[in-house]
Image 1 (cartoon, rainbow, N blue to C red):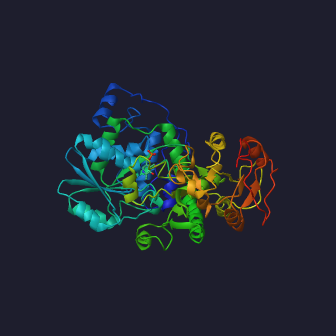
Image 2 (cartoon, rainbow, N blue to C red; image 1 turned 90 degrees about the vertical axis):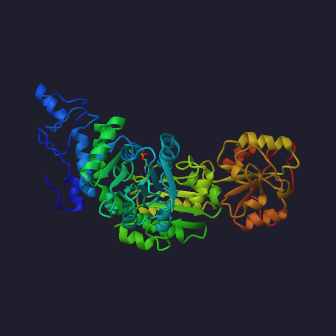
Image 3 (cartoon, rainbow, N blue to C red; image 1 turned 90 degrees about the horizontal axis):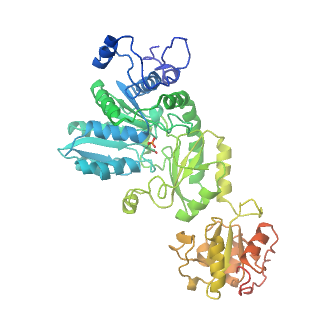
Length: 530
Ligand SMILES: Cc1ncc(COP(=O)(O)O)c(C=O)c1O
């Protein structure tokens, strides 16, 4: 069917559809490696390009072609090339369109591996690259050189949601004789028409919004002109990063609901972003649809919607973010994005851990930044999930693992106890070991790396921490009053060993300390945990 004049939703469903002998409504999975020719002449004609029938699946396949034609129609391109992964698309575009000695100007906060591939691997073959904040046109202008052959932009960028003005950068690239390549993964063709805005090639990790169901990995390149599409296809087939027919079927099936999924997810994302921004324990929120976004006006001009990706940082930085990620229940703690399931992840230690720390900092990817990909669950449930993870104070629910217990140990007084506590909790994320005496804080090889870089955290650092309960063997009145005033339940450790104390705590058998009650040091021998 010709869908040229039809709307986006109709193209999603019908563009690229292949008719088969049985009248199948859905393009079937042609799970074959090769295609038989009717005659030797037909085989020769196909190789010579005189007959456009299929030859071999690495070179082309009807199921994959259906997806490619659909995405080409959605982006308004001359042709599309599906790849085995998003990185397959990135590799293909670099290798097909660049030669030794060429220079690339790229978005500094581009997806980590897209930068590493160019900066570290392809540099060995004479490619040179410069990374700038492409949302700042002056930086792009200054970075251009006579030998710049490609401007590679990711917008919105991952994970900072920076928006690059595509029309303006396209004009700069064109004037310099360079091609503009846009990674539009975060927007998808539904929210951003990069070719219309001036790009020569647009690419997607279809693993994300285009497939949308977290059940396939893939990529796609769409070229504005046939000649560029042909160069890309040739390189893809030489590298051999073709999309498999079964993978193409899954991606194409997911693609059909792209508009519905994004409409739903971005409406929820807008609510969640506003809710996060209003919380006092959230330091900042970066969402394209918030007025606080630095390129809010540009995004409204360039995109048809703000999308479903949110980045934010909690007061308390990485430690607070870590706790949030451990506590959410509806959102899955996983990398990737753009699926029907809401996902939460930590770029500095996960997706962007390959980017050197200094570069991460320079591009604004702070250690406390949390990335949240909104799915299609009920927005009320997602907000409630975040709320319960942030508002963890309250009644104990022994055994459910919902509470964070803090074991206070008077470090000065008992080395044996300290190592027992460390041995017991070394790998247990729910527990945090603090020193009741802030002046004696020192290195303990446990998991409290985020509290003073490998130091046992001083009790003073509990301020602002979201703790349900604290179990103490000894604690000063000042610290005790502070904790209780903050609404933290304090329990006395009255058991002989750390293990027994923990068991009693999780069984709900420890006695809470009452306001005004003195809390003397005790149980320091090889006794209570503190
Ligand atoms: C913006 C962006 N581009 C490219 C990729 C690479 O895609 P893939 O993981 O499918 O290889 C990703 C993956 O997260 C991405 O977020």
